[in-house]
Amino acid sequence: MRVFWSIAGVEARKRMSYRVDFWLNAVIGFVAELGVAWFIVVAMFAGADRLGDFSRNGMLLYFVAVILVARIVRSADMEWSIADDIYQGALSRYLLYPANYGALKYATQIGALLPISIQVVLFGAWAPFALGIPEGVHITPASAAMCVGALAVANALHYMSCIPLQLVAFWADNCWSLLVAHRITASLLGGLLLPLSLFPAWSQPALAALPFRYMFAFPVDVLFGRVSPAEYAAGIAISLGWCAVFGAISAAVWRRGTMQYTGVGM
Amino acid sequence: MIRYLRLYAHFIRFSFTRAMQFRFDFFFRIGMDTLWYAHHLAFFWILYRHTPMLGGWTLDQMFIFAGGVFLVDAIQMTMVSNNTWMLPIYVNKGDLDYYLVRPVSSLFFLSLRDFAANSFVNLLMAIGLFSWALARYPGPLGAGAIAVYVGLLLMGALLHFSMHMIFIIPVFWLHTSGGLREVFWALDRYTQRPHGIFTGWVRRMLVSLLPFALIVSFPTTALFEGLTWKLFVHLAGVTAVAFLLMVFIWTRGLRAYASASS
Image (cartoon, rainbow over all chains, first blue to last red; front, side, top):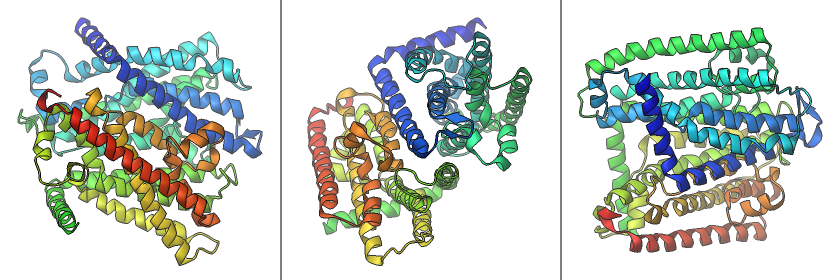
């Protein structure tokens, strides 16, 4: 555990060292992403007061929250790091370390969360003042604490879901397109592009069963007080179930991949 | 000119040969782009379940707009994306020297050398979706108007390329891993949404200083409302200015390039 936190600390310091690049990308990325969502919402509400269970400000607040949640869950976009290690042969040294490789990489992901958490606080602090707390949103200390738990599980779930795709790098020259495909799918089915309640009724059971909802939309729903304790427990259980599935797949692929890994990259 | 066309034909041949050696990547990339198209269409389809118009366009019009986005994106992915991805790496590692000594334009060579053969399949798919969106449109669209639309989209693709390079070339001075590439991709979201939804100074900026709304939205407006001289001059003028600016900063960047120590 001491090694885990030590690696996380090193990664956090590394992330903070490229300050201009980091803040430029962070601020423009957030403003641009929120800007597009903002104008889409304003255009959608041009002829209506409510859409589904959302008022205009309610949906705007949802987008602010889900964009910031996605930053924490994706954690500095480190989905590529395992595939990179395999391509470049850097995996060799990790194989010699007396520690679990997956845990070491997860420690770097946790370390990268520190500067992102600062961003999230700074970028999100203005929202309740600008938008107010719309009807149907009940943010309480309890819902905030539950949201922290949901975020921790969502971060782990996202990390676990990317590992099997990254391990394809043992066989394929370039698996980045698989990770982009994962990103596209998770954005749409996870509620990052649109609130999931806007999807057709027939798709709701599938959305609830798939892992993507629990990466982005679920922590926001928890924060907004829209999830009962029973639904919260069910959501966390489904997330952990998917983590176990991705973990089992990863372990099987890892065993086969390391057996034919040559240590000099692909 | 003939020399450059022959050179480009060689680039294409080499790219197809290379693509067939890495078959996994070939099919992965096709799958990725197919998902991207599907997610885009699904996004608009779900939106229009809750509103009849968005930015002044109906769902049928929005699908044509989406077809235009796919076409410009596929051209970009096929012709320039691999090259723009590698350019910052060449600059930071000093590998640019190898390309600068070639007896051809360095800008031509470095921005068009790697033709993405796998994305070429997606270009065909994008053309198919574009044709489907045009075919299902209930109103009359003449062949002339469609030809003008395609021509304007090609101009939009040139503008997109110029903007992309303008954001990457600063790597000569910044020495970051990708210049301002992440900023470009963040702003490129505005290309994928109709300019009718934007208002005020944001809209003014998107048709002038950061002309992302001109890339697909303006050509689509010309298709539905007819091409006016004002619109054409605006689009052509901004494209020309962006291209010349890109060539200018490329030249300045090469002067600032300090080889391996860069």
